[in-house]
Image 1 (cartoon, rainbow, N blue to C red):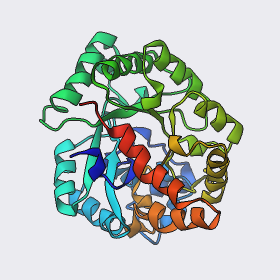
Image 2 (cartoon, helix red, strand yellow):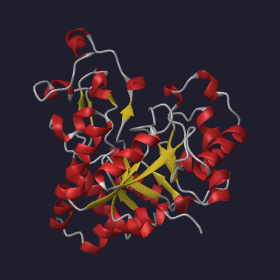
Image 3 (cartoon, helix red, strand yellow):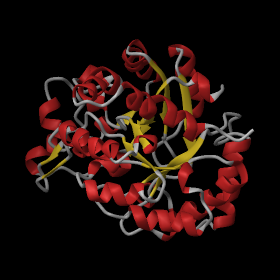
Length: 332
């Protein structure tokens, strides 16, 4: 596969996933949700804290994944970047089967997720050991397969950044220097660790123009976005369609309207070449079959809204075609 074959690309998704490491025990009045199967009938209740249902956080059916992707393909989609790393149950061979079933290109990421989701024996590994693993997954094959990773990530970080997470970032920078592979980082949601992460990567010799910072749209803070962009990285507005609330602490995710407004500020500042769009689908409630936005939400809904706000066709194509193509291109 060449970068020119990708077409319209979702830069951060999970086609199969297991996020039960992030499950939170629901309070008494919601205890019945702990093992509840997501349905259209209980969707609204589950959506008030999607981490209260174990089953909502686990999806391992390749046939259903392929079915969910059909709407994306029908909306002009060409490729999906799957960033399911160790800790979230990556299945590269299943991704290959999904690609064959749908006719879409699937680019698999490799690495480790947040410390919270990893066993103790992993988090003691040195930079050298981690770098050897990451390079092998890029150049030879991931996790005992012959399927090579097309990107490192999403590499998980917490707030504050855990020592293991820092070692992985430094290892990834080393592998990037050796192979040219791009890096995607998961920063702690709603925290402000982005610049700390970038400092670590830069200190380790990473090319920040080949780094994508996920979940920037989880903070409705245009000035903060501008500071991240100044470092030369790509900013992922990758949670479109996720407008969940969290009754346990009264918090909420941004709305798509807020995301679009922040995106507009970056576009007005001439940052189109640094922006990527996606959904980060990592719960069953986000699937179309459960009433969620689905993988076609960006091309079918967000793109028309951007155009209505005055975003040019050229900028849309830059964010959805040219930027992922450039990020994923490996040196000859």
